[in-house]
Image (cartoon, rainbow, N blue to C red; front, side, top):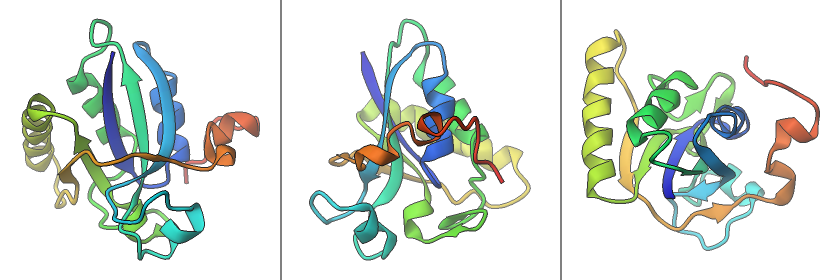
Length: 154
């Protein structure tokens, strides 16, 4: 098993997309990339913790590649928006790839360069080393599924 971590705006919809992907074993939503230990949703929403809303994906590399997960990441949000996705505004909604090793970094950088060539707008996605992943509160885990919703897309 391997781990991938992505920030693609609000974590609810991307979590559904990753969770429903063959080869993905488990997903968790939470906070990473900041400097406050064990932040709450309310703290992250202030923009003062430095965290992004993120999805931690545990996957089987024999069934799905990291590159394929990156393809899903690019499709499930608009990486040209800086610190926002639709009406959600703030640094916690930034687009970021949190890499867990040198191989992920190399693959993510190649993928980012490809996106920059393909898109007409500037890609705002950051690539950062993975940091501690703080799971979000239980009510955020599989939020849409618990409410019988298929999507929250705008």
